[in-house]
Image (cartoon, rainbow, N blue to C red; front, side):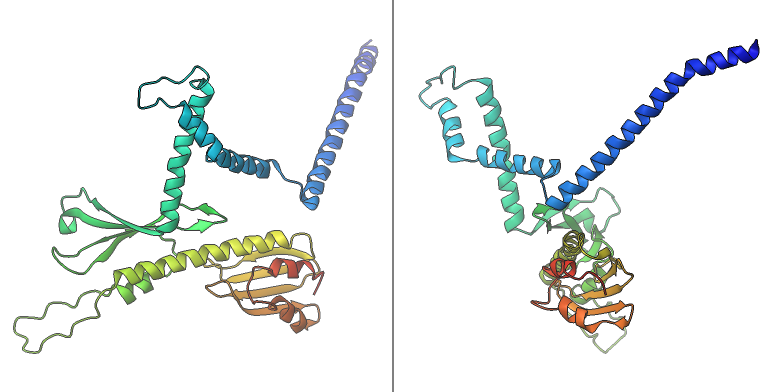
Length: 317
């Protein structure tokens, strides 16, 4: 009796198991088709959702700032003689458009200011009652761009070690460790000499005067060059992804050393200068160093701008 019951249960559950297996197979096929479609989109360079959304945002900005839109918004505003706009002009759509237009205008002004004035200064006060110079701090804001977008600003905070002193010292900063800020500070913000002892008849030699504008200029140059190298390595990785290159990565924090690995096991090393120029290339293939490919990679203008295209043409080393 128990055996018959077991056989009956198995017979009843078989259709459900077959249906479940069929659904699992269908899901796997859909997943494979989705992956294949994504690969085809990447190969054929069909715009992705992110790219289309970005383009939609750009077109919306142009529409808001166009002369026709601004003229329509100007007509919908109440005139100086007290004449009220018509019902069509005071529609909720125009009100929302006017709000977005004002926000876009303020955003454009801010971007223009950040673009033209890459470095700005401001003053803040340290609330600590024991702070040097009564807590007076000079702040320096440094702007940087990456792929056409503003990055989070970098800040440098300075204070005077003594009241009425012409010299300043770095109090805090948000500069990444890969930027040589300590060496720049030692060069352009040397500490003042110690006061001479009262009994010393020999006058102390004065130190080199500080040069804060030069420090900020060189610091911003280092920050901009750092982000340009990061963008260049990312562009190389994107341009060479369909060739014989397997992997491209930076091996140091300053993005000065770049390692390239090919599908056949070949390895290359690139040394980038601060301005993004290729200073040195070493390619090691199956038969040793390949100087012919080294010459190809460092050809043209010697920069990394078109390096991805040259790498895509090299199938193996």
